[in-house]
Image 1 (cartoon, rainbow, N blue to C red):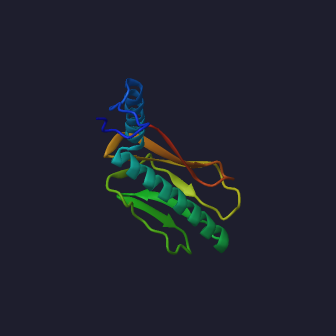
Image 2 (cartoon, rainbow, N blue to C red):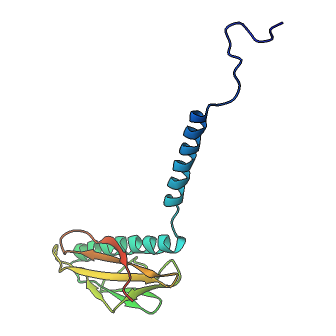
Length: 150
């Protein structure tokens, strides 16, 4: 006596092709996740760089709005915005171990066009990596990752 319904296949299991397709999909997904996960120290440095680029643009806008020059300078453990009417701009890094390479002083205005300027950041947590925040004087400050030179 037959136990299967009429018209149904009695074949159980998967073919080799089906198994290979599933394994390939899992391998591609695992590789994508592996490449998407980044080093936390590098991510912190990138966040600090994006934050600093935003702060430099805010300082630039503040300088243009007040008509007074504004300077950005790195200090021990942080940075400082200097000018007669500086308000509301922070003066410290959010991540520990962030350092400025060199001793740059950025002049942020009040003219609409400023000279080309840049600053390089590194982190003690990721010593082989640094980021550069730069402007050509016309465009906003942008973040450009690069390898550190030791």
